[in-house]
Length: 201
Image (cartoon, rainbow, N blue to C red; front, side, top):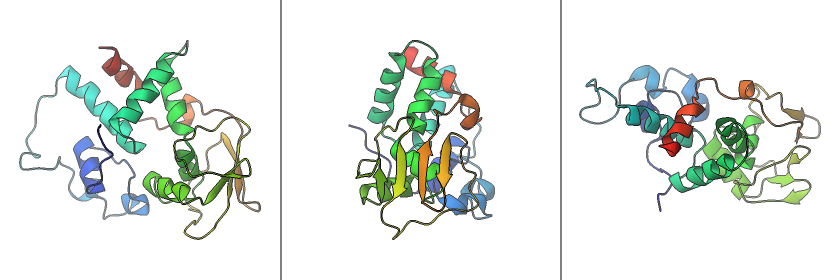
């Protein structure tokens, strides 16, 4: 089984040639690896290579998998789940990824990165519908409420834009899923159709 990558995070951004925001505020600073050294890692990273059609599809799949901090097996299972639904498979896949509990915690600005939010959820820092949960992969539904249970290690990232599909109460320190995210609510630089074509080949 393929495990989640635990090596240097900036290496992944350089490999995909894009900011994956794996290190929180550092990704927005001048210290960002993409800003300083925007070539693929390794001895031959600076060489220009012709990318095949398969390579283009693979890189998009790898990029999105790494953005959401998932293993290959997890990502493939989410795709299978999305493909079973009638309609637009790519959108369903992105909705599943966006409504993972660890991603919602990140979107609320309660963690510096998705990796950090995964750690905080695993430590039981949040309540889901007033129940303590420690499973980052839980898929939340419309009407679910995520609340801070233990503030230690949790700090609101004030500079992060709050998603329109979640209603945040600063006073109560809780977020409510108002609706499912639409395509325009998710990163524009993701081409989900390439992922669908990758798994459909």
